Amino acid sequence: MTDFVVIGGGIAGVSAAAHLAPNGSVTLLETERTLAFHTTGRSAAMYVANYGGKGTRPLAAASKAFLDGPPDGSADASLLSTRGLLWVATRERTRLLEEKAAGTGSTLVDASEVIRLVPRMRSDWVAGGLYEPNALDIDVAGLHQAFVRIARRYDAELRLSTPVTGLVRRKDGWRVSTPGGHVDCRAVVNASGAWGDVVAGLAGIGPIGLRPLRRTAFMVPGDSAFSAWPFVVDVEERFYFRPDGAQLLCSLAEETPSFPTDPRPEMADIALAIDRINEATTLGIRTVNSQWTGLRTFAPDREMVIGEEESAPGFFWLVGQGGTGIQTSPGAGALIAALVTGTAPPPYLGAAGVDAGRYTPARFR
Ligand SMILES: Cc1cc2nc3c(=O)[nH]c(=O)nc-3n(C[C@H](O)[C@H](O)[C@H](O)COP(=O)(O)OP(=O)(O)OC[C@H]3O[C@@H](n4cnc5c(N)ncnc54)[C@H](O)[C@@H]3O)c2cc1C
Image (cartoon, rainbow, N blue to C red; front, top):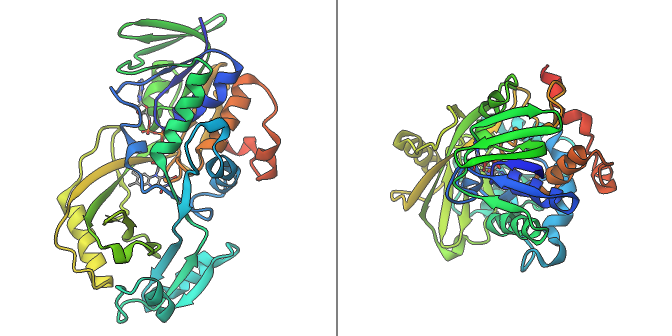
């Protein structure tokens, strides 16, 4: 008998494992042969305080201290580095920049400032921008590894190639079945990303209505002269690009519904993104070095789902991370650990404005 079973070894699952492990025995079960194989390994690796739903933002704020200074040598260095974020717009869309600016502390800038920050923007395309200098790059692999290190330090067991195939409620907890046998536990954390509703279905629990949405990213040749550019996003999220080492990471920023799966890029999405970026810039992109697609999974209200299923005591959801699951993971991990162990959330969550009631699965019941 283990105290807690965590299903899924993406950023959500390892963050839950790291925060639960000091409170009891943890077994994490992951279908794939490697951790972070799905969405977590496919992100754009940004921390943007003003991005995502209203409930997301306090979780991102609560995560900042961990990202700035990962505890107890769990990472070799800070996981954050300076980047900046620049929303850009054509003349017809500058009004959208103003709407986006409201209450964020970001700065509206004119076309000449956009071109100073990103000299390859076309002066006949861009009419203005919204600059958020505090947006940061996240070392996603380092963050994931930090959670794994903390979990292992407290003897958590991380089992790869171990899909959960059944969940049965027992008098004192849950029996979690896998092809190699079962694990009995007091509580289960469902951190299975795009498969969240599928995993709940194994326990006979009704779906939240999670929607996995495709988003494709690809690398094109860059230049060391681009390295100080901010992350550049069209105000309507029709494309984005950012420096990534010697390359540029680009995306159509599409949200195409999908089944839970290992999605493959569509060449048409990449071609459209290149058209749009070439229209807005003088980059003249012609070559693609590599490409991938991930599933950003949203609840119907696009807020995260963190909490116990009322009809199934001991079954906890940690899903609906959408496009902000990396930057919110330390805060979300701390919150789920408090809910699972029935303890008060740490004061820094409340100080950041995190209200546990906002994330409850009961809002869909
Ligand atoms: C292109 C792109 C850009 C993004 N950019 C950012 C960004 O800049 N900043 C940010 O914060 N977020 C970003 N995101 C979002 C972020 O990547 C996700 O929110 C986050 O990775 C979700 O993590 P997860 O652990 O919930 O899901 P996943 O990483 O998908 O992990 C779920 C795991 O559960 C496992 N699993 C499923 N079913 C079972 C089962 N039955 N048994 C055992 N294991 C199971 C899966 O194999 C998988 O490994 C981006 C995403 C994409 C695609």
